[in-house]
Image (cartoon, rainbow, N blue to C red; front, side, top):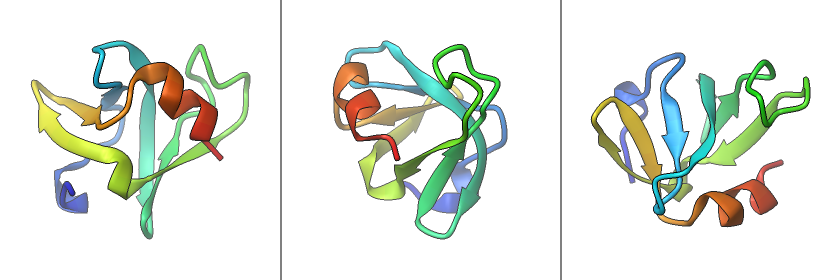
Length: 75
């Protein structure tokens, strides 16, 4: 799991397939709050469990699941 201190505002979140999942707003506890202005957010904040993040690579958060799998589990 990635340390929360490695996560920065406006980082792109990508699935394991390299596809866009969302954009970081901030970390709240064990969740990453995604920006509501992201093109896939439809104007609503969504949340992703920190445990879903595999690594930080090239300034992006990379998840352990594909983008489609992640989008189905966003809260």
